[in-house]
Length: 191
Image 1: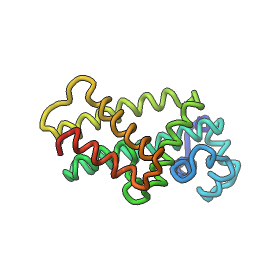
Image 2 (image 1 turned 90 degrees about the vertical axis):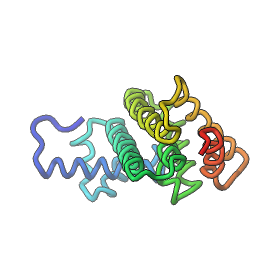
Image 3 (image 1 turned 180 degrees about the horizontal axis):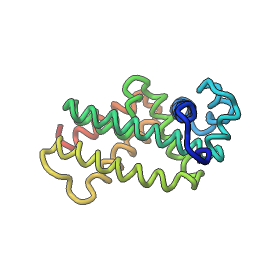
């Protein structure tokens, strides 16, 4: 939680720096990378700022995960507006845009975050809210791809298909799990 009372402009900047730093560390190293000292160093603020602006490390993790999710959703909305390749939009939404450039490492980190979140019940509400936005955006992407609204359960089936193909590719030591998922997705949606 933020410190009580009205935030100053400097306080708002510091808090934003801490949230951005937590999101970056989460994307780069997963939940274990988020520590008070690491976040403060990345943000370039005193260590005490982490406990002044956030009541716990859990609050800081939530704020970082929220920002990371919002950044991904904003990126994908921009791709939809630019009419980017529908399969790539779906993969960006599901695997994150970093998987385009960082490949296997970004995909592995995303799945580690998903699995790791199951051990952090304090993230459940945030993840449910993100899921609603995620499903809405995936519905829009599939609508643009197929020229029709997805049938009931289709969004979840596409999610299961991509996640399943990526996990299978990871198990089989495939170096391009995004490519494997792309092929299966294009076959499934007919693009």
